[in-house]
Each structure stands twice: as C-alpha cells, then as structure tokens.
Amino acid sequence: MTFERAVVTGGAGFLGSHVCAELLRRGTRVVCVDDFRTSTPRNVTPLFDDSRFELRVADVATLIDVTGQVDLVLHLACPASPVDYLRMPIDTMRSGAFGTWQALEYASGCGARIVVASTSEVYGDPLEHPQRETYWGNVNPVGPRSVYDEAKRFGEALTAAFHREHGTRAGIVRIFNTYGPRMRQHDGRMIPTFLRQALVGEPLTVHGTGDQTRSLCYVDDLVRGLLAMAESGHPGPINLGNPEEVTVLDVAERVIEVTGSRSGIRLVEPMVDDPRRRCPDITAAQRILSWWPEVSLREGLKEMVQAGRN
Image (tube, rainbow, N blue to C red; front, top):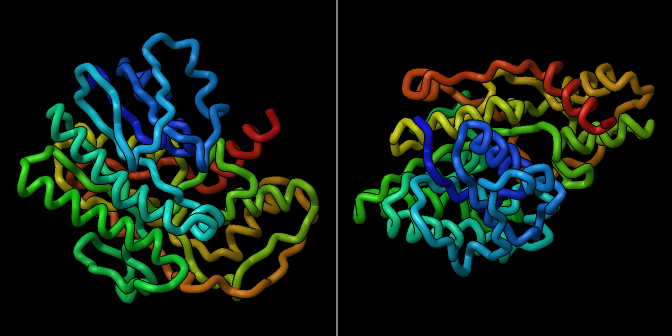
C-alpha cells in the first residue's frame, strides 16, 4: 500500500527523520511537524531538495495546522530520552497527552489512518517476562520517569477511546529500545553514550551492576514495523522491538569491540526506577504484520560508527 500524503509529528527527531525518508522513498508526500525542542533541522536537511517534503515548525500539543488531503498520520512527537524528559517533565506530559489528543482530533477530522507511538516504558519494571501486549505493567506513577511512562499510558487510553467512540482508524505500537544514526551524542540513552565515550577513550559508564537487560532494535527494522502497522489497519497495541535480550555490560563490551576502543567500563549509581529486564514478545507483530527484526546488534553498531565518522 502507498499512502498519498502523510503527516509525521516529531518528524525531525531521530526516529521521525528516518520515517520521513522512508515514506519519501516509497512515493508518499510528507509533512514533517516539529518544534525542534529535542531535535534538529539537520536531521531532515537532506530531504529539503525533494519537492514532496514539507516542514512545519509547530508545537503539536497546541495545533496541527496542515491543510489538504492527508491519509496517514504518524504521531511520534514526545521527548524520549531520560535527559530530556527529566529536564522538562511538564512539557513531556503535554506532548504525550495533549499532543496525542491533537493528533487524534486531526486524524479523525480528515479520516486518516493514525499510528500512535507508545513505548515499552508502559510496562515499567515488568513482573512478566518477556512482555506481551496483554500485560498491564508495573509503573511507579509518581517517580521521576513517570512523566514519560504515564503520558504514554494516557496516550494509549485516549487512542483506544477515539477508536471506540469516533471510529478513528487508530493503531498503537509499543516501541522498545531503538538505536541508529542521528541519535544525539549527549541524549542520555545507552548506545549513543557508550559510542561517544568509546570513540574518545573514556570509560563506558554503566549504571548499577550492568546485569540488567535490554532488547535493542536497529532503526531501519523499526521503521519497517511502523509502516507495516500503518498499512495493516490493526488497532494494536503491538510490540515492536528485537527479542534478543542482552545485558547492559554485554552492550558496553560490544561497543568497545566494534569501535576498537581501549576504553574500560566504570560502574556508577543505578538510575531511579530503571527496569531490571526488558524484552518484547513479538508474536503479534510476526503474525499480524509479518514483521521481525533483521539487523544484528553488531551490524547496527557498525552502521552507527560508520555514519558518525562520515
């Protein structure tokens, strides 16, 4: 299926910019909406030469002012890095809650399919492993991470309500840890932090003991999953992530290996409410979307290093 014209909120962010580029490659006209609070125009600068690409600088929590026919909305706008959502907790809740509301109102008004990006953080520090979409989560509602977790949980509830009450053609994806080129070096997430430290010879800082686990999906795989969800018409929620579970220490060691760095590893204080285990059950994605990740962690890390050196 080819969508004629799509609106991508948060389209200049790390994930959004890859989504915009792939939509253009597939022949879709793209309107990127972003206020650059946690992103940069540099991420979409290569797209400016394509006449099918439009950029609108706007706060999606206030208004999505895009006229003309649109048949797809991908709502990705929300601070996703701990550095960002701990620095601006209220703005994070505005984006996740009111931004989602605006996106749903807009999609309902123009009859577009909308895919709302939720997160594995809705599972909190999970008591079920691996996490299935039927699991309701274990979230601290007043902890420092709650501004992100609860905004996304509210966004899911709102999306489901629009679907039930207005018949909005909405779907929810729960995105697990994603990495790839265009992540900011200082955005606080694990892989860009490890790569930055390894490339300058600093010790890689691992929070806690390092035996906590993550499941890391390369951005190209994630974008395929998002667009498969858009084409499916399914309401979700559907997990999108890589079911290969690795410890944080193992990730640090792989980064050192791929970069050829002589850096060591330094253990630091654990993060508050940091999940001990994180791994998606992607049975639904495989069955409904015919989707599964294809890029190995080693291959993905090599791509990030190569992109950073170009």
